[in-house]
Image 1: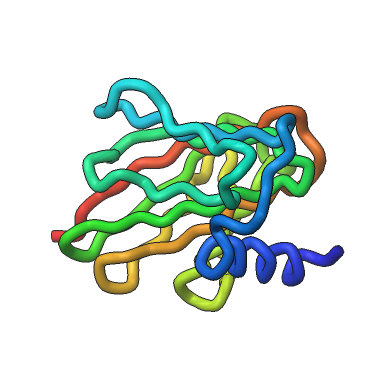
Image 2: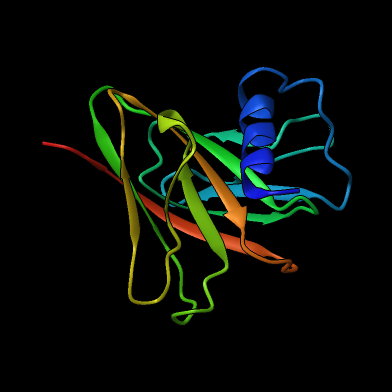
Length: 148
């Protein structure tokens, strides 16, 4: 299955069929925000997407999914920017960032020296994170910055 097919399925699941797709028990994902106690966890009855709380400015998404993508929807009252970071060395990047709000455009793959940042279109931003290979657990750290 090529990257465009996976992204198309991810966006379809995110926006059209969130209640009808199931996630196998070993396919877990969680979202942790530094400003919110606890974490959100995708369960077996959900799609592969998170609605990131408006108050979440710094967070981390971790996922173990056999199809290895997860989608995020951010919303703020005014335009903003989300930056993804990773501690992996150059040429060993683990995941890619796609802007689903802008036609599933590839934005980049973060590493220990380079963050990947995406600007919202208006007050909403939809992102798909896609594993580059099979890893046991994927982790993507992010920060949200309101544009002045």
